[in-house]
Length: 124
Figure 1 (cartoon, one colour):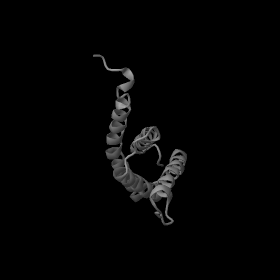
Figure 2 (tube, helix red, strand yellow):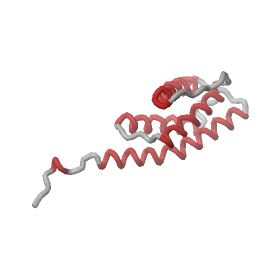
Figure 3 (cartoon, one colour):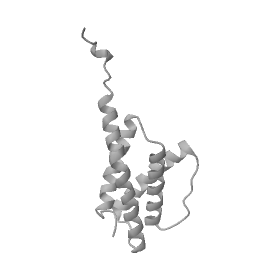
Figure 4 (cartoon, one colour):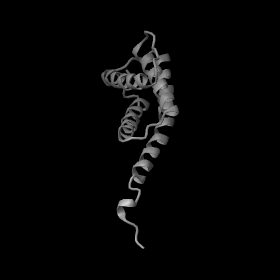
């Protein structure tokens, strides 16, 4: 007897893509945190792309903190703030993986941002 196509689990491909992006992102994000901390120790500054990226990352982080509780970042240099926010977003995603289409979009966006950080595109 043939199975009705409506009964098939069509979300299997979505879940596989989501898991793949999650597992690819977390190690890259950890490396980006290290890269930011190294750049901070070398007294580098953020260029225009870095400032725009920091603003977007801050927006992502703020939405996560609204969902899970408050966290604070003490006034500091923008590059220090970047490394701290990255570390907190990494920790949040490690404990609270995302399982929806917005989560997949966020994983892809963050992965693109981490690649730019690791290539040094955000620093002067």
